[in-house]
Image (tube, rainbow, N blue to C red; front, side, top):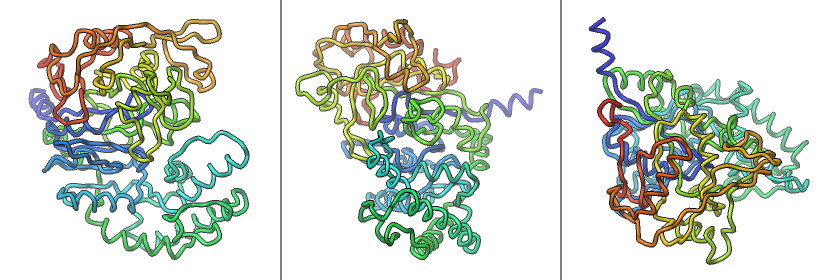
Length: 468
């Protein structure tokens, strides 16, 4: 018994970082910052529709597939089986980092079980949205990068996976079958010949039909580059843990974009919640020790779908315009404007429930500097009833009228503050009210995009008995 307990004590401590709103909460900075205490960083879902921005010593870096820990020398980075992978975009990202002097290939491990995103996935994605536009229907607001179609192939058990790149004949046979299916859909249903797919997809298309030879030739060239990075990620992660290493699991998008728990159907195609770190990386749930929920000090959303606390963010001088302008609210991946609104504590209660949050990290507190008055949503009125948690259905959410508490703002700057006691008094009261209304303690506060502008109340990698 004592030997077993000693072995357990030697194992590492693992942290999951998830977004608690509709994405764009600032996860990249926190993952990069926490990587200082990690031996490995793991991406476990989504695709290159995600975007994480890091600012280190004033230099901005945007990542879409590679875990944010790559900016810390010597740390291993893993892309887990829950990610749908565009090899083209991954290699572009690697090349960009290498040009900036970041060593990537010896530190990046890609699960052989990742489903591949191929050009026809993006073609289908764009053609579907175009068809909705022609029909006068509301678009989902996808990024057009093929994420949803790639996940559909995975669930239908017809996906090409990273491991198939090592077997050209098998790859070729599966590819022919998929292209035949996609071309039938594109021609007979979506009238793809009428759609503008942009310059990037032109090499793969003739009259709206995907060309097998172009897709196959590119994939085989990429296979030779990928082979040294392909790995049994599940096994490697479990070995790191057994040897006492700390692992950091990096989520993409946000909880309210989760395909099961988000504002369906205005969601992404994967599970963004903390529990998916286990399935999407190949580790047991018992290896997830702490869940850090990242949330902005206000709310934003990109694309369509209900947003109860949304403000007018386009009219100069309004609080919403202040958030959009000071917060530079444009999507990292798409460049689309983010819709802005007040902080929603009832929404965060839903996120806390489905993620099992251990603590919160409040980001972009500095964006609220200068607002004389703040509104904090503590619940909703829905069909004449008062509720204190976000409903599950998008139609119900669209009918929700937010119930607000009014709090005083502050005029002093919070930019770059690294000690809690040095925050303006009203900023501290605002944070305390967030804790009270959501039931989740604030453990970390970010006061600018820069790596070092962070207030630590409790370190996620600290064992419970050593931090309270």
